[in-house]
Picture 1 (cartoon, rainbow, N blue to C red):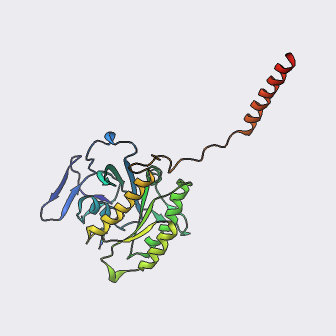
Picture 2: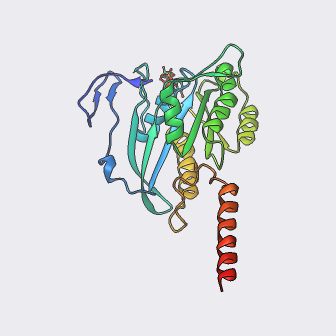
Picture 3: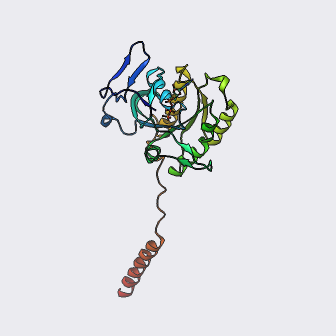
Length: 256
Ligand SMILES: Nc1nc2c(ncn2[C@@H]2O[C@H](COP(=O)(O)OP(=O)(O)OP(=O)(O)O)[C@@H](O)[C@H]2O)c(=O)[nH]1
């Protein structure tokens, strides 16, 4: 969801007492200043109403914000310290995805596909109170895989709304099993009640991405995560050149 209000770019306000915060994406410094290879790009994906925006806002501001409008996909930027190094973190909020009637395909806007392509790491969110939102995760992950068919996909699975235990529809062990089948870690969190859980989850993914990109001292692998396989050598062309070299050698031998 998008946060309510239309404040001037670069501002963050709270209307005191009402709990109705106004917030826009806040680049803490111009995106152009971002140091290549020290930018961690994360996208938050999931079904409708699972708390994607609430989680991002909780992570960035330590606050829970209750009033939202439909999400148009905001990009948030922030500096974080990872492995002792200052890194530019960008978090992309997204509109919701939904299962198609056959429950295997996804309704997924083009804007989301672009975000998936752009990102280095993925926060897949469902609500523990909504089994349908849980069922979207596997097809959603497959969708990410289709966009990044090769290589490592840093991912975490977040079961949000853990404060609503009485309404739980997805047991924690189902979340854990699913996360490990995707090669990620499962976190249960409540954007409403708790900052620590949300912080731990996001930071875990940031670290994973940062290390995958090369970390502090490692070889920089930006793009390496998503690099298309190098083209295999063109054998026809190689043979043609080989014949050419051979025939020129034969010619020079016969002319001696
Ligand atoms: N109880 C509870 N409610 C939450 C929590 N997180 C979000 N909500 C509420 O759930 C609703 C949806 O939250 P959003 O953050 O807008 O969810 P979203 O996934 O961005 O929604 P879409 O825009 O539909 O994609 C809002 O009413 C939030 O106040 C949580 O941890 N616990």
